[in-house]
Amino acid sequence: MQAHDSTLGSKAFGEHAEDGLVVAYQSHQDALRFLSSALGRANGTALLQGPPGSGKTTILTEQHDWSVRDAAVALVDGVRLAPRRLLTGMLSQFGITTTSEHDEQLLQQLNHFVVQQTRTAIPPVLFVDNADRATPSALRLINWLAALESHGEYALRIVLTGKERLSILVRHDSMRNLARRHPAVYSLNPMTAQEVMIYLRTRLIAAGGERSEKVFPIDACEKLHELSGGWPGSLNKRAIEVLERIAELKSAKPVPRIIVSRDGETIAEYELTEPKYVIGRTELADIVIEDSYVSKTHAMLQVYANAIVLIDLNSTNGTTVNSTIVPKTILRNNDIISLGRHRLKIENVPALSAEMDEKIRASDTMTMRNLADLRRSRARRIVTALKHQ
Image (cartoon, rainbow, N blue to C red):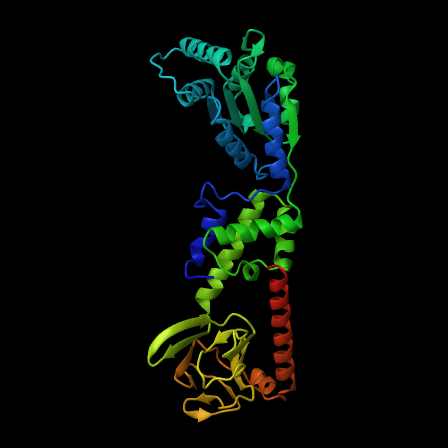
């Protein structure tokens, strides 16, 4: 994670996320195919329903962006939607200049446009998001629009979104014209646990985050899937809370780091966020030091919550800390590790507790076993990578 942790949540999952930052999952893709198919049918009417935060607006916006390539399209938010706002919104998005203040004349203009479009091109499309939250008078206007025809063909395609009971609302007497068109209905499904993991990590990376698998490990993704029910709206809120919590912890406790310099010039910096780091000349090392003085696997750092230990791994030339060769030592803040022409300065070292001091002074058997495990793990990753090349 980087210094902008405090705003990363908003960029990845909140109000500052880019409009094009969409991670499609199975139900999302199925809904788009459903809308595309429904709009291509003779009745040209569709209902997309799901609970709040199920992604209806995102899907509707994406379908709008596709439809606008072929037809005149209007997208209107149904929350407290009144007839005048519906009329002016449609006319404006259809590119029709209005001069009248009278609803009757606006209706005539709209009627003339959609009928003419249906005769000469593709029927216009009306998208109403949150249609179940529109005023009764706006719903009656949508019902009137649903009856517009040109030479026996419906003159306006209509897509409505709303909560799970949207299809019941359409069967009301005030919506009988829309009901006669027998609108197709699709109910959204939540993401699976696997889709949640892909969703979280992809959005984090797209927003500029790093080490997404560390921020959202598998167990954390499973927990967030459980808490959110797999719905994107709730998942976004939970993810922002996680990132804000990480930012709070980082600001409260500086992350230990190593600053690598050569001949007095800084060449690399490493934040010590993992439990173990191998220092050496080989590319398999976590901290690579390209110096003939340095052995392939020269030393290891063991990072604890309240201590950092440096262990020499039987290197040829030994490991020096503050001008003293040491086989194993507990590092202090601003200690300097010297390796040939390279200097490794450690900063933000946590304070050492008595309990940790006792653990560190235990035998080196566990240390060498950990090193062997690290080597085997890296070897497996390399073999896997080669197989996929």
